[in-house]
Amino acid sequence: MAGILAGCTTSHQSSAQSGTASPSGTASASGSPSSAATAPVSPAASPAGPAVALEDAYARVVASVLPSVVEITNGQGLGSGIIFDDKGDVVTNDHVVGDATSFQVRLATGAASLKATLVGRYPQGDLAVIRVENANGLHPATF
Image (cartoon, rainbow, N blue to C red; front, side, top):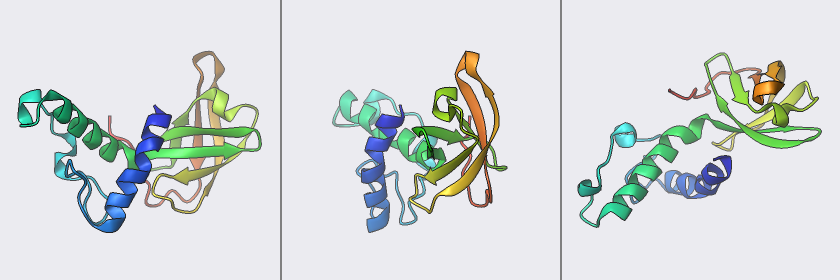
């Protein structure tokens, strides 16, 4: 999933940077998703047919989730995670964390990397939580 989202980062950011809406109307001049980002789409909603409606729905989901996706690096490798709360907790996979206890977290918005530390890990479920320092302005995912 991170690879799919990462592939969409460029088109979403370029739409937001140019101040124009994407074909599905998901980006504003500020790059934030429109209120339609959570609206369900039925195949009948698009005059061009089900494939276009599905593509539009996909673009809206990516636009609404992208601000919560982060890239995590440590001395051993790289992975992705999702901002879970406004305290800076990021949920990732245990295999991303590995044996590391400190990390660099880069936001999908392209802001400078932030320092993070390990909160806990659950290797049996391949889950881990890290916490970003100075968590101001993060966009936690909504579930």
